[in-house]
Image 1 (cartoon, one colour):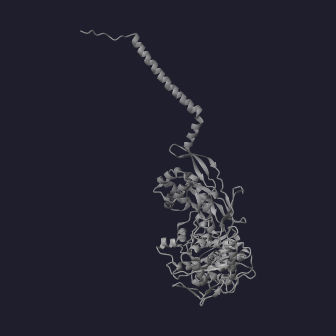
Image 2: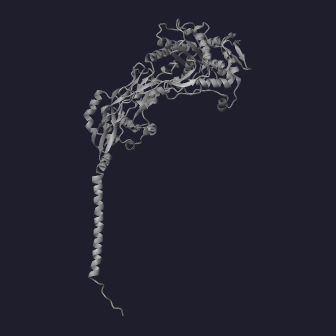
Image 3: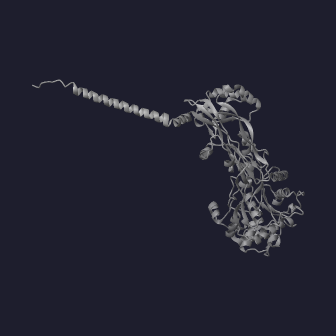
Length: 635
């Protein structure tokens, strides 16, 4: 039988307990060591860094807008500026009682609380479902819900400011266009950035509440003019509520633009267009739309641009009202549409500048060539001239001056569509000119492949002869036809039209210069273009010329008329013609080129469009004589 014994006590047991105690002490010591090392690291080694990070978690910056840069004309006239405006701004995260504070604000502003809440929830093109959704998306805003406050309203707000902790009245810069509608389509307008625009631009420093350029030069050169925003730094508690304002950082104004535009000429061009539209309206019973653009043909510098009807860009500077915007959208003349660069129209007989140039360069015509005009051209389908009985036998100079359709039907037929397309493309038809405004059209350069693609039909000889006189499928904008006129005037050089001469910083120093953008030469010799210019001179100075009605005695300039025959359509029930006139002046050493287009005006280019160009020429060269001469015959 086994004998039970007690485990040993004494030395062995004591040794075990001692080992355990030592291990425990070592573990505690190690833990304390790690803790002490961590405290030293946090407090001494990286203390300043962690303190900064902790502060950053408590700091928020409310953006403050920077004043936009100004715009000046070529002589230093300010045409786009800024004005101070008192506005009501809301910082959503600071509102403790949104409904109550808006009700209090409504009493100050004299507006229903529901209206203010609707404005608050409609931001950046987004309609938020409730205040919490807004606060989550744009907690710092600031969201502007009232603008252009009167001094009395500001005073009433000040009396209640302590009850409106999340709402403030701020003095902010607002865009101002001192000349109202004048030149509106050059400058464009500004507006609040939309959500999509913000997502696209936030990587370039744009904020969710920025005011940006929406059209015109305001859009093209927004990054130059927008400046660098400042901010108001606030401290928030763990609940995200503001507990202190720490200070403001100043905004840096944007750069200013020096433009090529001559504001005196711009005013004269607008007045000429207005006067001619009134004359036409008296004759046809309603107003029409039109465009005119003027440039230096030797550089492409744009001196004036009119697109009627205008808008007033001041309407958009402080959030355009729904009523006003609806007026612009519903106006049948489409004032938001910039006809000078966005509109594309058949060119009428102004295209004969291209057809004649192509014929000379291709050897189809020489200066001494003649063609007979019996009044029609028979291709199986008969194409008639507007002169009953025809013009008889003409040389190219006479054909251009008198704008004989049959002469150019024949020349177009001899050229063929391949050569006609090639030279039209060289002049820029079917391509953007490169003008520094958004939205420019390419126009339409029709080819056999184009017709097959869009109409599933072959190209006929009749399409070619129609195109040779600027009818049919070919379409161009006024700025494209201006480029054609300039290239003929200057001997064949092609320039992109441009508005911006240089950029100046907030101190007035030139930060960047701009200038002519040369795009190459026409494949037409100087001597051939000289024949075209001579024919254009005859259009004005010959008693048989189509533009003899705008002769300026003692002053020589050259031009080409154009009349586009239209069919009846729902927006043109009477099928009224478009009218064109392209000219350059003076004849020997051109300093300006002008293109005028009058939409659905009826009548001829000489009667409806040329008087506008004549007035522009007279204004630029300070000629005392005014008013049309002669009868405005034909084309």
